[in-house]
Amino acid sequence: MLLTENDRALLAGDAGEAAAMAMDLVVTVGEAMGAGSLIDITGAHVDSCLYHGLVSLEFAERLVAAGGRVAVPTTLNVASLDLLHPELVRRDPETTARAQALMDAYVAMDCLPTWTCAPYQLHDRPRFGEQIAWGESNAIVFANSVLGARTNRYGDFLDICCAVVGRVPAFGLHTDEGRRATVRIDVSIPDRWLDDDLTYVALGHLLGQEVGTEVAVIAGLDDRADEDRLKALGATAASSGAVGMFHVAGVTPEAATVDEACQGKSPTRILTVDETAIQRAITDLSSTVTQLGAVSVGTPHASLREIERIADLVSGRQTRVPFYINTGRDVLADAELAGHVAPIESFGARFVTDTCTYITPIMDVPVGAVMTNSGKWAYYAPGNLGVDVVLAGLADCVESAASGEIVRGLQ
Amino acid sequence: MNRVLVDGEATGEIFVLKRPLSFWGGYNPENGIIVDAAHPQHGESLTGRIVVMPHGRGSSSSSAVLAEALRLGTGPAAIVLGESDQIVTTGVVVARMLYGVECPVVVGDIPTDARGVWRVSRSGPEPVD
Image 1: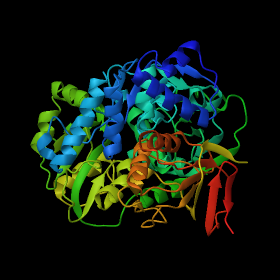
Image 2: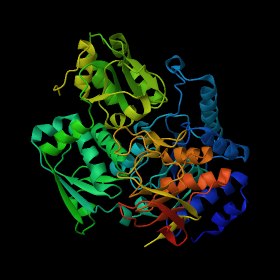
Image 3: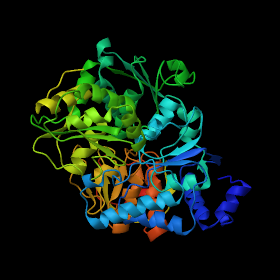
């Protein structure tokens, strides 16, 4: 790899031990990936603050002890605790202490304590064309696809190392060529299906399974594919596959047309998605359990608009099952100011911040299924929590909770 | 067409994943078992095996889960990918950096019905007679 004089100085320890350790990982992984050089970044989003065992903590503490500080503005992903609602989390004291120490370590490196998996919902978010290093699979795909910022798929450890040196290996989604759509997906479904949130979850499921790591352009959607729906699409695709970016023709910023997304070349594959495929995808993500045990929404973290929708739906009603809404602490503060929090709390729902119900022991494994509007939650919760999942739109989630029975079909 | 992502040598029983696996949410580093309920090989162990995966999948936390498994000795002996993956590579490099655990990672083409004991080295994956 061709390194600049400054890169070599960092690697040699001229800027301290932590920068040397970080640069070592950036260069080693970059060379493995075949990158020819490094480029500057303007920001980072770090997933490494989520506790996965001692390795998480030992790596972070080594960086801190070596004087590690981020060189670019860096937000933090969800962690393993809810610092605003600690009473919700039931975890053994030893793991709690380690999870807290891990969070403290990243704050000590000057990362911002945002604790959200949806950093694109913060007031200050990357602009079109910015080179960034983001972890968190759903955030990566959103940054590339919807914001037009440029990031590869950064895993834990590498995200913070890129932030410390402010440099990333130049390949893949950081380059024009790496962002070219090679697969075209034609969506051919009845128009009213584009008004249904679950259509976008199903499209994400199919996208991840069909394209794996490739960049696809989806044709046949329109501006009803808003940010919340594109969030759901991307998060599901990044769970079923290794999708780092997709285009939606006429909607996302690098795809005014299919041809622009393909950069004037022909796609190597063309796939068609019809009603049957959408229905099958929804069935795939849902169990056939008929009893309702709980509801969990907001994976990735609920946006202000989603919370506003919930507030409208719950008005004057009462949930009969435990109902959780995962969101970021900044979005929750905005929701409070807008007056959405009180009606939702009177409904009996609980807000979870800083973490998520599928990574942290918050809910009891209920008798009956957990209903969610999230394809990502539907992927991971059965393995993480041992629960059955029923997938449904936001309106069905509220209606089901209020009646205590599984209701599907509202939108 | 072999490419070495992380250098090293390892021998073990080959285990071809029928679908890509997200190590986070799909694999328990404490015992090396696949926990993704929807995965066709749910319940099987990756410990000490040469794990073959067409490409990476899912969570960016997979780097940490893989490194934790290697720290605990429940991880794969080696990983053969159909295409290079930054998240898998990062996890393995960090396990080597912190704990000196070796787990070679190569890009190679392995038949989906491969069985028996294989060896992975700089010259790529090959069956051991």
